[in-house]
Amino acid sequence: MVDGAAGSADKSVQVKLVLLGEAAVGKSSVVLRFVSNEFQPNKEPTIGAAFLTQKCRLEDRILRYEIWDTAGQERFHSLAPMYYRNAQAAVVVYDVTKASSLEKAKSWVKELQRQANPNIVIALAGNKVDLVQSSALSASPASPPESEDEADDATATPGETQGATEEPESLRQVPREEAQAYATDAGLLFFETSAKTGEGIVEIFTEIAKKIPIEHILAATRGNSARNGASGSRADSTRQQGVNLEENQGQSKDACNC
Ligand code: GTP
Ligand code: MG
Image (tube, rainbow, N blue to C red; front, side, top):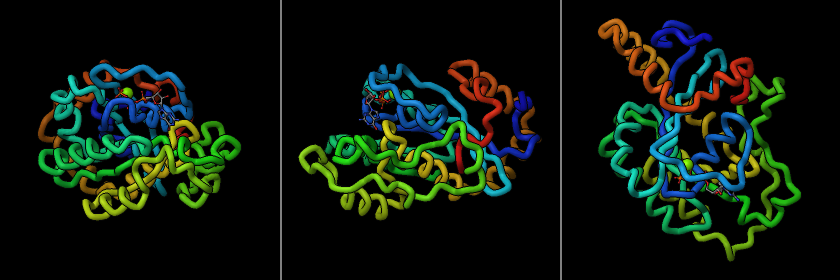
């Protein structure tokens, strides 16, 4: 539909984003919640990587996230550089009920800081927070309102999530404060999220969008396509490898709620 050969001629800005993290922390579920406001309780492990897109309105700009959801299983680790190499943003996911997954997240952050684009915006997401919230069963925290369109100028407000109250500490293995302190120290955005309830999901992508140096990307994209007419063909070829959910929801430009 709107996609031009390189996608850079229209006013939307393409932002390549990669998800990294240990297997089964919920990377695919976070993306599924973001792009189609769904949750699958028995989501199968990702093989290789999956490609999805979602638009995100930010003030007068439209960001078009091109999302690479990588596989967390160790046997796929060596593929990761292919996906983060030119990424402008990364979401590194861990599971708040599994301490080892934070250690894995830290090693991904180190790898990104050493080898990815130096300006990459990195967000750390502590997922499955619903499992440590006793009120999660009855509460309905903020989630991406796929069918509502009145929120299109409303930047997601973290304060909207009022469902969280006491936590059954038995399940939590990563204290929020510990992860927050690490994130601050490492210069990362930080969120606790639940792909199941939607808590914190829109916020991640909204805050990343605010931090992305859009002008810089636009200038670089224009420079590249002027210099190299073939740059668009790479994006086209990647599109063929995965599921492009944007095709299914081309009319819901505001689904991102940003
Ligand atoms: P790989 O593709 O193998 O790297 O895993 P992944 O990180 O993509 O995890 P995935 O999204 O496949 O989720 C793994 C399991 O955790 C699935 O059974 C999901 O339903 C479940 N899950 C994901 N996110 C949440 C969450 O926020 N809360 C709860 N309770 N379960 C979740
Ligand atoms: Mg997955």
